[in-house]
Amino acid sequence: MIVRDQMKSESEYLKTEDLDGKPHVVVISDCQMVTVKDRQSGEEKQKPALSFSGKKKKLTLNITNILSIEQIVGSGDSDDWLGKSIELFPTTCPLASGITPCIRIRPPSIQQAPALAPVAAPYVQPPVAPAPPVLPQEDPTDYGQGGDDIPF
Image 1 (cartoon, helix red, strand yellow):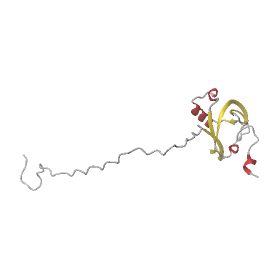
Image 2: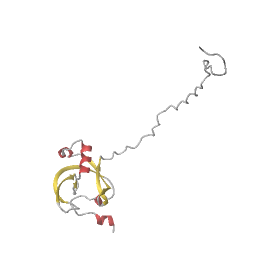
Image 3: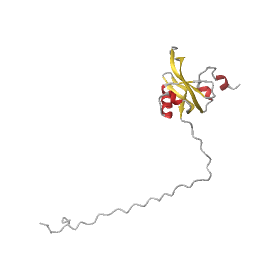
Image 4: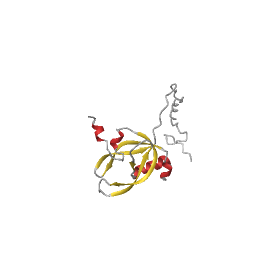
């Protein structure tokens, strides 16, 4: 038995376990307000939930994830989010009850194209050695060196 598979929720909403410990790039297809029960108080609350193209489960949003999407998309209007790609990734978050697993949102990772040839580092001129320090020379007007010459 694969224990991780047994932990996946049958809920219509995404849980951290559903991500299998790895990030997933998804395309936002809808954002609607849904009624969910608060885990701590048990009270029903209205929260925004995202639906994704080709995915069954929705993601309810907290303020942290809402702000992440706003920054990625450049808009606080959920209508502007439709068709945009985001990356969901599992992590942990501090709560009053301790550290707990959570899902966070970031811009999709950029796939690196394979390099055709190694790129040489740009030429950087080596630093120039500093000039030797200038030593003070005897001051010809220093009359306090045992002479009787007084300049006035």
